[in-house]
Length: 93
Image 1 (cartoon, rainbow, N blue to C red):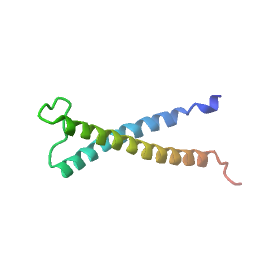
Image 2: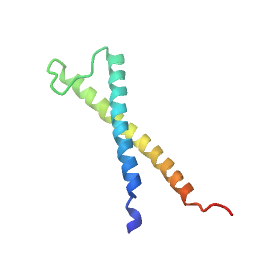
Image 3: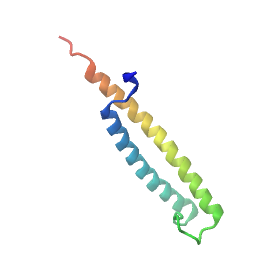
């Protein structure tokens, strides 16, 4: 049962990867939104933006952020597991 719990190093790495991914995805999606629509991304308190545009932005941002998190977390986990396996292999005599 103790093997099911991720080690502390992965928790730290996973947290940092998640934080960096969220920040980068928000920047990239905001930039893409401006290029496609020609307008700045709507803010939370932006009453001048129509409801449809605000919902569209929320959907694009939500889906984009989740896809980025899945891809980056899976890649980071694979790399971390292979690095950890390398460390556990005893050196050849």
